[in-house]
Image (cartoon, rainbow, N blue to C red; front, side):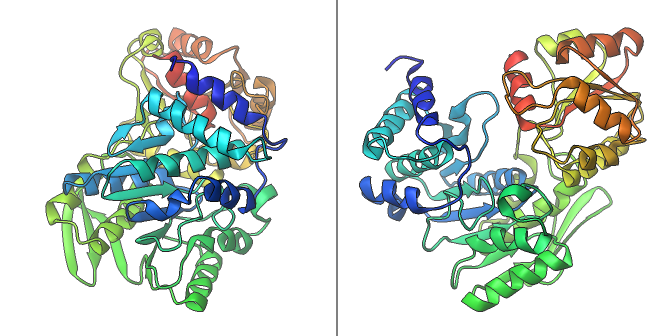
Length: 424
C-alpha cells in the first residue's frame, strides 16, 4: 500500500461522525463485536486515566517493563507529528503497511455507521494489539474514562489514575468531583488501582467508587510514598524502600508520576534493576523536551529551545516550577492555544517566570485562538505579550535582542506537533 494509504483512510474516518467527541461506548462495542471482540485477546492491560501525567507515567511504566525484558504494546493520544506514534507494537511504532491494513479493516467492518475518529482509531489500536505477541498492553485514556473508547477491558492487570484537575468541563462536568467520577470509571472489580496525588474532593470520589465495587487501592501518601532526597528518588511502599536515580523526564511533578509508575511496577513484580530503567530510560516528546537539532534549533543559535505540550493550569504550574529550577537565564515563551482551554488559568502561573510571551496561531487548527487573542489573554494575566506570525518569526525576534535566551514553546500538544514537524 502507498505511503499515503493510512492518511487517506484516516481522512475518510473523520467523516463518519459529525462530532469530534461524543462520549458513549455503544459504537465501540458494536465495531468490536463486528471484528470478533479483539479486546478479549490482548496481553495483560495497564489502563491509565487522569488529567495530567498520563503520558509520562505510561512512558516510565513502559521503560521499566522493557528493562525487565518484556515486549510492550502502548497506545496514546493525540499524536504529535504522525498518527503512527499513537500505536506501539512490541516496542516498535506501527508500520505504515500494518496501520493501513488495520484501519481499512476497521473502516470496512464499520459499514459506514456513525462512529467518531477517536473511537474507530482506538478500535484499530486494540485490533493491532491482538495480532502481535507482547507481554503487556498499555492503554492511555483519551478523555475522561468511564465512557472513553479505551474502557472496554473487562479485567485489566492494573488501573492507574494520575492527578485529576479541572479540564474538559464541557464533556466531563464542571466540578472536580464530577470529573474525578468520570476518571474513576476505569476502576474494575477486584483489579488493583494505583492512585497518584489527588485533591481531597477527587480522592473521596475515587475511594468511594473503588469501595463500592471492591477494587483495592494503592494510593499516594497512604500505601506508597515518593520524594527527592539529595539528588535521588526515594520510593517506599509496604515492601520497603528503594533508592533510585531521578527520572530522566524533567520537572518536580515527574517525581510523583514516577511514584505511580513504580507502584505499578512493584505490583507486577518486576526485577529491581528494572525500576532503575523506569527512571533512566523513559522518554516522552513535548514534555519539557529540550530540542537539540533541526531548522528551528538552527534559527535559535546559542539560545536554548524547549517544547512542552501542557495546556491546562496544572500543567502551567508544573512548567513554571521546572523553568524556575533551571540555571538562571532570560526566559521567553512562544505560546499558542486552543479556544476550548482555560487560557487565563494557563497564563496565570507563568507570570513572573518569563520575561515576555510571543503568541502564535496554531497552524491548520480550526479551534486555535488567534495570536492576538492569546496575546491579550497573556497581557490580562500580567505577562508582557505580543503576537507573532509564526514560531520561527518569534524565535528570530527573541534571539535578535537576547541571543542567550531560554525559549519555551508551549500551550498545546497541537502546537507541539506542528513544531516537531517543522523542526524535522
